[in-house]
Length: 391
Image 1: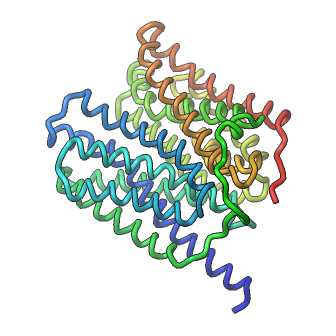
Image 2: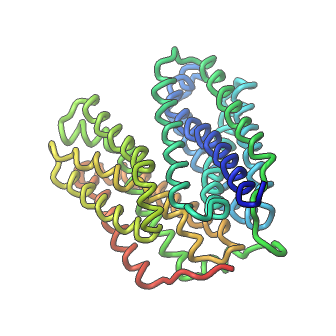
Image 3: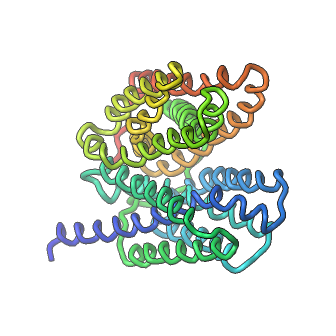
């Protein structure tokens, strides 16, 4: 077997491993919402205790992303990836083997934080492994993750939910991830050549691209997650929709995000990351803003926008590597996304108060404004910050 055939076989096995793990991560991300009422009844929680589950999850994201990126750069990527996967599995085991609210919080911190870092690490590894078509591969993998999320929501929603179902579902997830781990364990993953050194966060943050990318992710998170968190309320209270109709528009939006990553993956491969974000991001922004500003029956345009903006997040993560030295890519990625997540958290905390001051309809206009700022800022970014050459 020649080297090219060996490399093709290795890449196929790694792709299968990543798919299995991404399905498990996607399903894992949906479980908090699905089982929220189960937790409330089983552990006799008040509203504050239920919201603490979400807060701890966000905290896990911040800690794992901010610190984990530096570990990926400092040590062998495959070893760090496997260690983080074991941390995720240990959190799942806490869910399966224990029955305590405080342990549930610890498990959420470990699982959600590790899951986010796993997704980001896969995004970092894809261009290193699949050098010929990273944009295609990364969007297909995020499509697979979306299938894991939507499939679990539909499938688990049909079960009789209780704490037994919660444990059974987590057993299924740990088996799926373990299968992916076994496939990955015997494959070689290329790494940075030469001695690995700790990368300074200060050095990363002083680069011209850092502030731009943090703002880009921050405004994009506000726009996408704002729809997830507030569209249902906006549709029922301001657009006089039924809950079922508003939920339908929301499901079309996120269904479009899932489907678009598969449909447009070949286009991302052909156009390249920078041009793809510019084209699809602009088209998506037009539909997104029109759907909210026109309101009424035109809100369907907002739902359709999910199809176009679908490639923005995974492709933007992929593009980070073009602006940082190879030995600091993971550190930069972790720092950028974790700080952008802080923007997202602050926005959602502030948005509730803002609706009390100026009303839900006026407050909701922040979302298209955020998407528009993202688009304009991206154009300025491309004009003013030039990629660096690695290797």
